[in-house]
Length: 467
Ligand code: CMC
Image 1 (cartoon, rainbow, N blue to C red):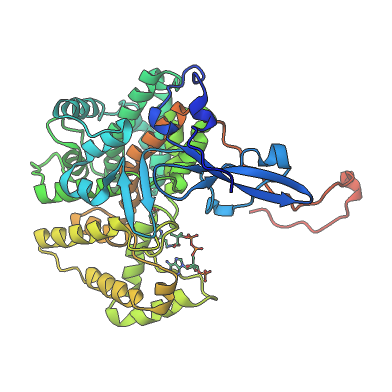
Image 2 (image 1 turned 180 degrees about the vertical axis):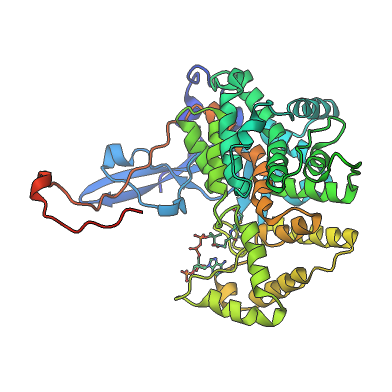
């Protein structure tokens, strides 16, 4: 190990960032402390070890390919830090999740979603005036361009809402031309506010379209979660009174999903953004990635799983299947790449779930099945050894169902919340002077070099039916 040095990294020493890039002071908190040596085929290299303010250190492998002629192999990026970030910290072994230093449970219990959005975007909790201004700004942008509505009508009514959301959000770049220049900080902020504001409107609108009810416009006197409930559940034929317990629960669900460090969808947003694509296009890429059942689609999959399990007596059979190496069945809502302890979001979610069911007077047998599944799994050697705990998606579906959200809408709710995190991470990346276009390498395992064979010399083959 080389001598400890508290010298700032190369980045911190850079004088001025390239034009259009604001330098974020908190991104330069990386310290170089020691190095790790690597030797291969008589060649040696010392790689600096980088330390952030918390979490595991990272080897700076940037000199590896140019100076050592070697790449790294890390499918799924399990050991790779792709960026510096000051937004979210996770300690998966201890079950810690913090945004800008604040514990997730504190934010969920004492804060609200607008405050968390502000925190993620700006780095600090807002003062009362900053908060009022921010909320006003978001409310101001909740309406959609009227031509988005005919765009919606181009979809089949039975389309999955996530398919609709990917299309509509990507399509916003065709409507809001005044916020496409990502080099302009004001345009970046305008696009950010628009996206946070319009996501609930798009989500509610796609629900209304799917059930054939008229679209409900946003109401500026309502707060974010209240407005979302109103747009989703009210009908023009009768007054709609927002239940404060449900609005609070929805707000809390949004907080719990707001950001989660460099997960698949956030990394996708960063990768898309690294090419200079506009904000709307980048967020659409994030939505597409979130849709998968291993990521945001898990909340929908949990409910399907619980419905399939049925009564508690069937649980041992699914536990057996989940453990069977020859069966690709998994317990949805269990396990996490980073958490090797109870997901701190799942704890708040479980409590919220109990509150909502109590408020609504619902006795959902699925909750009973879920709790029993959790109990059995957490005492089973397979799950204990692999440290598979319930994640955020395990209880969220039960709450959303109780609130009246159709199952198909669950992942869309996740997307509404995660937009805050995507935007904050995207903005941080754009403003980081170290940012380059994302471009991983590969270990090539295909044919090496072959001679071209003309078509008429390649054999007859057999014609298959075209479908
Ligand atoms: N049920 C049964 N076995 C599991 C599960 C599960 N839910 N999750 C992981 N395992 C096993 C897996 O078979 C593997 O076993 P082995 O080492 O014998 O091959 C081991 O645990 C490690 O799994 P992995 O797939 O290598 O872990 P990963 O980090 O690549 O995947 C995960 C993480 C979340 C995709 C995975 O745990 C999973 O598929 N869970 C179910 C889907 C789910 O709930 N997703 C929501 C994640 S939280 C919301 C979000 O942030 O998106």
